[in-house]
Length: 584
Figure 1: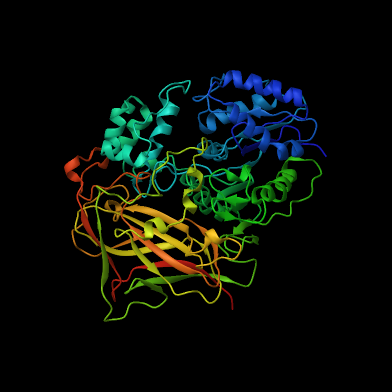
Figure 2: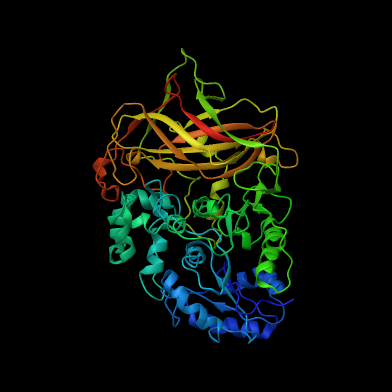
């Protein structure tokens, strides 16, 4: 069986995910590539060789691989400017191009990278070239404001500033971000605001940073480049497999937003496929047997590569290949640690069940239950949020973002949340012990009724699976508080994402926002927890809790303590709308 001539595979798979059957030829290729990409390290090459075995197995003995890389990052004779450049380069590369061509088989799969480059397979779907046969975007950056790299509901992800600096400050990427502290918590606190820290680093010389400073709200700058919005206006012509990580610490919004935008166009249910794995950002190309303290009893990434991705690619790229036995949705069910074959998302199970929005109420006495507040219940619980001592997003010292030198950035979404639950500036509500399994599939929605004594506020809502006090065979998991879905919402955008507005002090107001998608089973003996806080620092910039026109330039005197109240009264109920899976 051979690859179809001139078929194009545009797949987000890894920085140097390329391999040749001939070992000597492979190393020659890598040496040539490294000479032209002076920011690629030996560690990158080692990772490539480790992760590309399945690609080598898939491609067979005779194939040619062309690397399509972003021109502004690498010294290559090309520029990539979205769909137009893609249209120009595909025929050149497929019909005799020689850039990094390993042999002359006449076939043209293209490989690209995960994450911010993962949006390129999406761009290729805009007026697609006829040679494009299939697209597999993995963990794509889709909307930089709503929930991917740069903001989440208006809260700025300031630890990404180093990435902006190192990507854009110099063309050869040699300039490195520097810090004056081992603990990023101290680094960002000393600067005061993200804007001031950028000024100290000369970051305003970088065009993209200036754009972020100029567009802190969800205006046309962000809306018009959001790929889910772009693709919603396009006809669906090419089969797509969207790959999403359930604990994606960088781009947890993108793949699911695109699925929601384009799946309605798939009227025959045969062009849009979704994979949801128990991974951090990009882990589907690495070892997938564990994530932080979690153990999955098998290599979930290898299963995805061999049992889902490979037959899918065979179908479209190999002559005579059978139709892949791949369901429309392959979703890993965390908790039970099983892959589920689903007809759509969300659907809960293969057949015979429904997903029903079900309110889980915050009650008096810091309890969670399905019962709405009673008339005589205590109206609220409160805490004091102090910007001088913001709640850390993980246990200190706060590490920078990164995947090398012992950094555990990729694991933070599965950190034990006990560190936060013991703080007085975190409101914690807990259910009774579950007597039976409870499964949720879809997006939980936070419905918060809250007040602040300030005029602006952030609200962090976390849905947590609390393990039993003792776990057989895994003593370290006893009492573990596993965050299954969480996000942050900047209060000034309660009425409009584009036009910020001061919050009325001490007035209970509703805030409604969706949390990331889950496919999780709470097991018998576990409990459900909801934590609410007003900072996730230093990953997200501090809210001064005093309304200012642009938080990037908040002054030291703007940062003030505020009393935050979470209401759970009759007519002012706070609840999490759970996508509860039910059976007849």
